[in-house]
Length: 176
Image 1 (cartoon, rainbow, N blue to C red):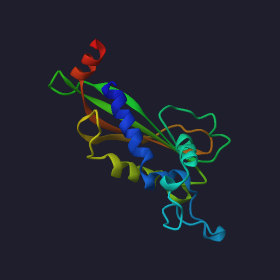
Image 2 (cartoon, rainbow, N blue to C red):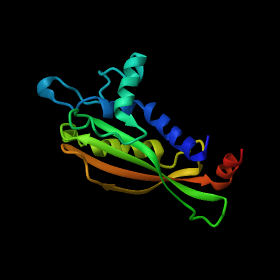
Image 3 (tube, one colour):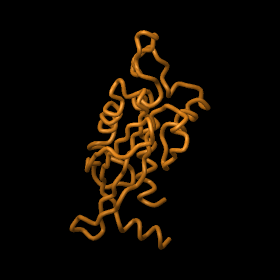
Image 4 (cartoon, rainbow, N blue to C red):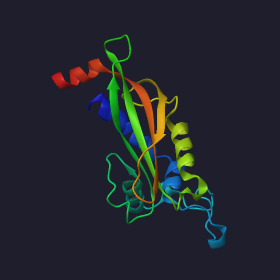
């Protein structure tokens, strides 16, 4: 497996195994008039404890490794895309570069009543900033964040994290 693939796979694995993030992606915002509690309320069932088929249905709808937006116009949901960004050779060591890990957050306006984009962004920071990813060198650092054009009815925000990546291991992979 290439370093880039390993880095993105491990970032994805961290996302789909984080209970707090999955709750923010899956459960609707609190609405006391309808007896709907905050998505992080302990009274709600843990997403990780759901039946395996239901769990994967949630994951496959809310956490993707490729852009898929054709269903967003009919569905009201929160979603994260994770994918590899640019690779930059910005270090003085010719064997090491920096790999961008891009997270696109899309949140329907119905969910933004509880500042869902900000809450998801904060959780991403808790998960990745100064952490380590298998396949990466060193710790993950934050590079940039900005809003971008979203499908109708959605808010969108992009976060870019960076991690060291060995150029040597990638070359060895191609030679194997």
